[in-house]
Amino acid sequence: MTRLDEAAHIELTWRIHELTPDFTVEDVWSFRTPGAGPDDFPVMLAAMRAAGGLGNQSGPSNFLMAFRWKLGALLGWDKPSDGLGARVASLRDRLPSDLRAASTGPDDARIPLKPVYELEREAVRELANKTVHGVMHLGWVQGSEGDYELRMAVLVKPNGTFGRYYMAAIAPFRYLIVYPAMTRRWERAWLDREQLLAH
Image (cartoon, rainbow, N blue to C red; front, side, top):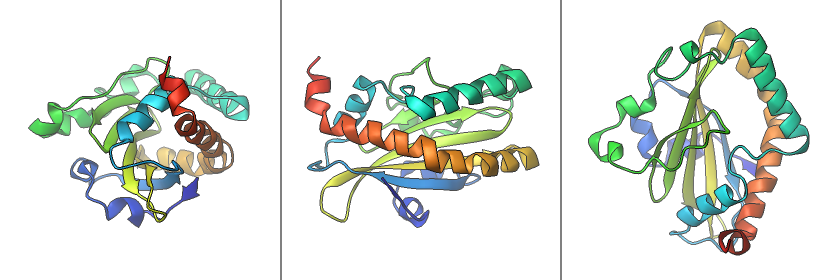
């Protein structure tokens, strides 16, 4: 996993740019997928899902995420009235007709991120609660070594001052615990893709 400058996301011609001019790029990361070719994005997504998807956490990351959702329940951060279609409109409401007709990819009830669209080299999920409206963008690009690699960008629209403080407070946990654990799972899913997808 390598953290990249926001330009690594902004300067590429992703469709997400049409939908998120009012969002800020919070993080951009690349994940190693040695030997990957230009058409392997669906394979990568399928391997990630077969390995447990976005909801599969382990160790400290699992504890941290469980703690976050329990704290949110206690403080009322994740009420439906603060979510998609209530406090904020879903990005799906902004989709042009061609993206509206595209696949959304499967929904996963275990995670709060809801699918927006999924293309041959780009997939988008979103969540909203009392703290932020957040977007996770996954893209497939050619890396510096010639192989293709997975890129993840996190875009956010904080909910006022509280949301900005929240994002600042959780940054160390994201960088030190959540993203390293995610990297191990996702990069391992690519390496184990044949075994995972054989079942």
